[in-house]
Image: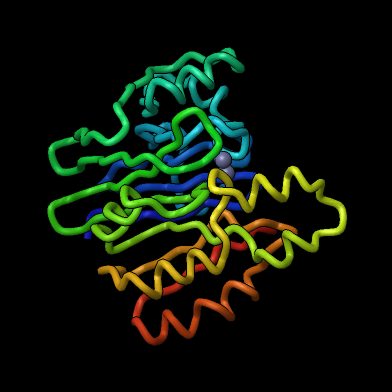
Length: 250
Ligand SMILES: [Zn+2]
Ligand SMILES: [Zn+2]
């Protein structure tokens, strides 16, 4: 297998993935300080000079906070759609070599790796998920999903390896003692985040070609690895996929 998708870290306060294709390395989002990203890469013996590019899903801070420093690296390519690029540019003084894609289209990174982007419903300029395709193995990244759409379904169903959102336990969100109600409405709304139950129902009802399912973007205070594991592990056992849960407190 020449394609691997890892999560370096993920929660509501920071997100960064690592795509390994042959001898090339790409980040998906840069939602930690650049210092932290380099620390996380070190565990894979990867340095900044080994990276080839960064794919950006959307402009929320938990996905781009490390971007400013990374864009100073002349050897990196930054992949985003124009709306996301513009939204980032509006708020941050960034440079870098940007490769602008149109959401929904395929583009090739090299002759053996192509990328399909798909729109996701979330309260950002033009948020996307990614489907990374090689001739025999596909990986998908889909987080920050207010709900599941046909576009998400189609892409996820093509991948053996998926990073998927299980953001919150709905009851914990509703009963949270200090969160203002407008934030609760946002999280639970159709442009917010995917609940454990919505993620579970989707996986249970659509038996895809999944070998690895990594659940990510867990809320720190309205979810936990234990809650997610209790819900999903029996399904993983029954369906025969490997379950990974990214600890939001790590
Ligand atoms: Zn977001
Ligand atoms: Zn996010």
